[in-house]
Image 1 (tube, one colour):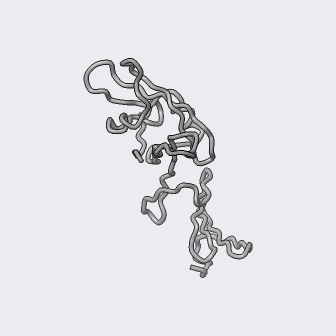
Image 2 (spheres, rainbow, N blue to C red):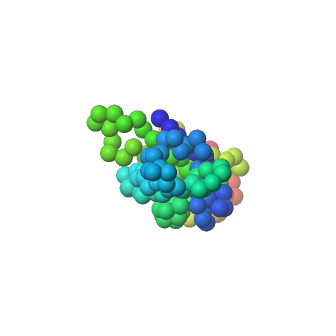
Image 3 (tube, rainbow, N blue to C red):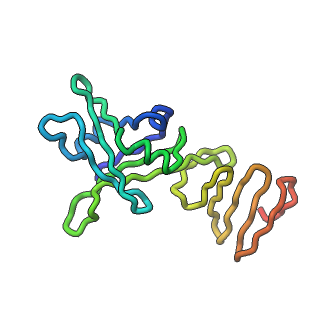
Length: 165
């Protein structure tokens, strides 16, 4: 399986996604010496995206994904620091109809430490929920936190009134 992942930079979000040259060999061939190739990838929601990978006509190929990329980045609300991963599965009998997969991972900070989340928790505008062991989840918002266990929810200010941790 061929794969690459990348922490996104400003250019990746606003213009195009730069791709490692080594990933070119796992893409469909550039027909007749062409400089671009279209391919489809499926995301974690089983949505199919069509992307175009282009290379320079002369010199170092410097591959980039342009077509379809900005729509994907916008749809997933990707930001600088988030991560994206492309992978190609081996084509075997009975394999998935799309050989490529794309996954996005949100950069989150839990107690100041960077982590990447593939939506195992819930991410909204100013709220990050992260699963803990024992059926609990912690959600940090701008001024309060929430505990959930057995469908009961308590709300407390960060003023130290909660002793559940």
